[in-house]
Amino acid sequence: MRRPKLQIICSLVVALGFAACGGADSSTTGRQASATAHAQAALPAASLSPVARPKPPHPEIIVSTTTSTVDSGLLDVLQPAFEQQTGYKLTILSQGSGAALKTGERGEADVVLAHSPAAEKDFITGGHGTRRELVMHNDFIVVGPAKDPANLKGATSLNDVMQRVSASSAPFISRGDNSGTHALELGLWKGAAVETKGKAFYQESGSGMGQTLQIASEKAGYTITDRATYLNLRKHLHLEILRESDPALLNVYHVIQVDPKKSTKVNAEGATAFLEYLISPSAQSLIGKYGIEKYGHPLFVPDYGKDESKLGS
Image (cartoon, rainbow, N blue to C red; front, side, top):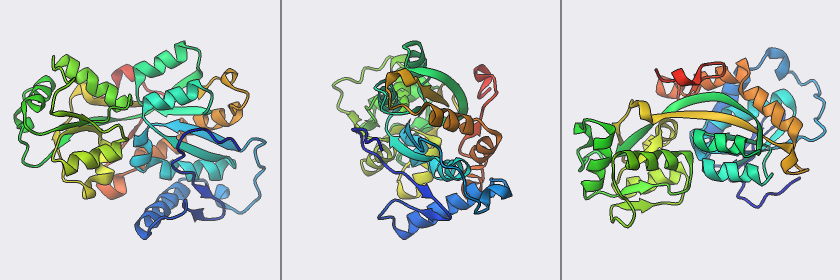
């Protein structure tokens, strides 16, 4: 088994049942069990039978993905369904989209699931990926303390939001990790003509979305997050949604197959299998249903086959 020089967050295993990575508490176990139940419900009845399934010749697939697909809980649903259907086992590397793409560039992952369109296109044109497919979208939101010292609820535009944050006494917590979220945030500062370098209000966490939200909550600060991660962690946070639904806050995810020429260790067959699964009707259905039971509405919108230029319109 390959052991990339990156932190492996988790690799879930499903075989006649569900076992979490070691050390899960009762609440985590319950969440994972529930996720597995949802995944199994979407499988054809025949796939749930104990019939022996041929093992793929190279069963491990390394998926380099943005933290939001993990922190939102979505992969807790998709991973066991894929593994049970195919016999493959996923190893998940959870990192910002920029780091996820760099991992693919080095040939240390087989497939990348990211939400940084400009960087993804550079990845393809740079010869690092062979196939890129639209998977889903949700949106970004601006969150902050209930007292809202910057009065973002009174802002007239997204540019006004960013200018009010920079002028307030509350901190803004940036991921600062070259992720898709960070790239979006930097574009918003630029659009609002706000210089953040060296400014006291601007602080970088250098962490994933979940940890960044926790820091913003502890410091009564503002941050930009994908909606799915925020909703999944909301009960642990003292943050409210203060700006949403702007067209510029659309958050689009693609899956990219790493070019097997990058390394002899790249599992091209496995990468193809996972990519095809994510755009399949069964996975797209799971994506579209995820979050409905808990939040009353889905956290992601399945998009395979759609015109990307019309998303969110």
